[in-house]
Every structure is written in structure tokens, then in C-alpha cells.
Length: 421
Image 1 (tube, rainbow, N blue to C red):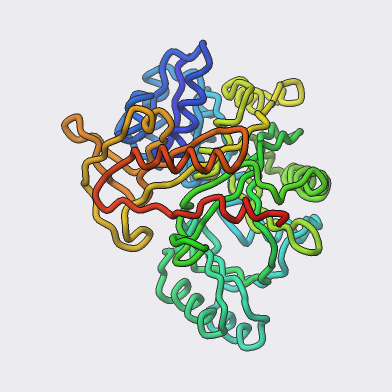
Image 2 (cartoon, rainbow, N blue to C red):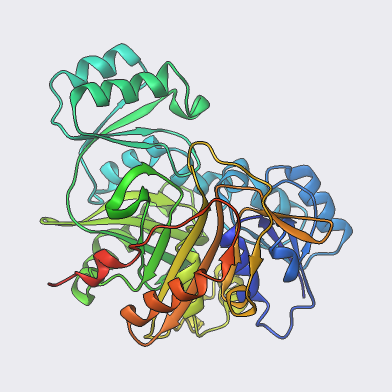
């Protein structure tokens, strides 16, 4: 089979490496890919949101199956455009991808169908939002309605911080048009859990749970990032919690989307908080998470391509989805200064062992040399029998990834190790 994977980050690198295990795969094209992905796929310089060019390339190269991985092309209708030309895809159509594309839509969906989430109010007028904050409970959470590279959420500890966040989004347009409408939401407490799931619009097959580390600094300090590391499985996601989530959240969400005429097929990501009152939905994503994918897929024992095809064809109920009972840890090596200001263009060197266990996110090839080109540069993943061993191995191998101004958190997995203590 000839495959096409849309996207160019660490998540896509993990997906491509997993797809390569299927013996029927002849070639994988990555659009646009990156300098590290080039070792595992044919990279083509077509941007992930250049949908007309993606479709033209797929037709010209007789692509058998496409995987649309990032949020932007999904929300823009990349799957719709490819399917209309007869190219089957893994990923939701635009009318289902709205579950991530609009936080207002997602919150209203949960309210309408009784899916547990935080209390909230929606605003498209800044003055009304500021007035509401005069009496709203503090801390509170301010969310831009649209896509914002995973950074459109501000947790405000004071009224002034909350009002500044509202002004930044609605007047300062720090997230562009995504902040024209905002959600002000109840602040919940409890451990966070990420659960990616395969679905064909009828059944849900959850993947191994994971724990992301969003803040830039150790001990969860600093700004929110796209994710500085992950571990799987998440120790707070017990069998009892999983059972409640399936019954109260996962299946009701699929049923709600079907009832709205927005059948979701692909990977539906549930961002959850395990509150004292039970699990609550913090956010939905319409795709594989990044860097959650980098710890979840290495634990997959079944064939990824077979599962993806089953999601597309509606046969997931008859398809094996099996995960290892081992543990995984991914440590991100970023450019110092991320997520605000950072320098690019530094040569990257990796030991042979590190390269075999590292997914490349922000790098480009220049005259055969791998150079940094983004904030999050690599993610190094280790799989082991225990979480402690996986963390130790991931850090040991990550030391084999070197470039000027390299930075990584030193406490990935620390919170998980303290679970139950």
C-alpha cells in the first residue's frame, strides 16, 4: 500500500514508525514531514493546510490510504476533500472535527447531552466577560474558542490575571480569531488524564492512558507548552475510573455526535480530570495528542494500519486492539526559551541508540545535516517493565540527543511516581 501522512511533528513521526511495521506498506509519504521523519518516510514540501495540493499529490501518486494527523487540516476539511476524490482516510470529517475546532461547540454538546464537564459561560463581548469576572469564582479558566496550538488556555489565579487574559484574547488577539469568542470555565481540581481512543463512529476502543506535562519548567512551573513529556499508563486512571469514563463520557460522546449528524471516525482524544466528584471532560481533541502519541503507540501490540482501516470501514468491533502492560516515558528536548523566544538552526547530533528511540519534531535537513527548526525538537521514548525504569531509560537515552541551547525538564514522571503515596 501507498500511504500518505499529513503533518510534520513528533506525533507524525511516531505514527509513521508504527505504520511501517505493516508488511503491506510499500511507501509512506509525509506532507510536509521534517528532517528527522525523512529517515522513515518520503517527505514532500506541501504544508499540512494546503489541502488542494495535498489532494492533487494523493491523486497523482495513487495513494491508497491517507492519515490526517494535525488539528488544522482536519478542521479545514482535509478528510472531506480526500474522500470526495475516492481516497479513504483516517480522521474525522470537518463537521466532526469541530469537537476540537470550537470549544464553545464542545461545551454546549456536553451540556445538551449530560456529559460531565466544568460549569462555564460563553462570551463574544469583552465588556460582558470582564463584568462577569467581577463576581466569578477564582481561580478560573479562560479558553479561546478556536485552535491555538494547544496554548489557548489560561488558568487565572486572580481576578486581574483573568481580566488580563480576556483582554489579551479578545482585544490583543494573541490567538488571532480563535479568541474572538471565549469560554470562562469553573476551575476543577484533581489529576489530569489523557485517553486517546480509536472509534469508527459506533464503538470506542480506548488506548493506554497517559499523563502529559504541559508546563515549561520543573514542578509544573512556567508557561503552558505543547507538552514537555509524557508517561503511560497514567496511575490515576484506575479500572474503576475507566469503567465510569466509558459509561458516562466515551460512549455518550459518540452517541451525541451521531445524534447531531456529526459521526466521528478516527482518533478521539479525551482530556480528563479526575475530580473528587468523578471524571470530568476538560477538552476533546479530534486527533492523536502530541506528545501522548509518543508513549501510547510504542505500547501498541496490534497492527496500527489494520486498526485505522477498521475505523474507516466501520469494522472496529471485529478488530483486535491490544496494548502491552509495560510502561513508557517520553522526554522532550526543546530549545531554551520555548515556548516564547528561542533560537533555531543548531546542528543536532544523536547517538545510534538515541536515534532509534527518538521522534523528531522541530528539525530540518540542510545539506544532509539535521538542524533545529522549532521549539520542541525531539521526544525520546523508553519502554520498560516499570515506570521507574522507563523514566530512567528515557532520560539516559535523551542525553544522547545534543544541540546548542538544548533544554529538558528533569521531572517527567515524578508526579506519577508519587501516585498513591
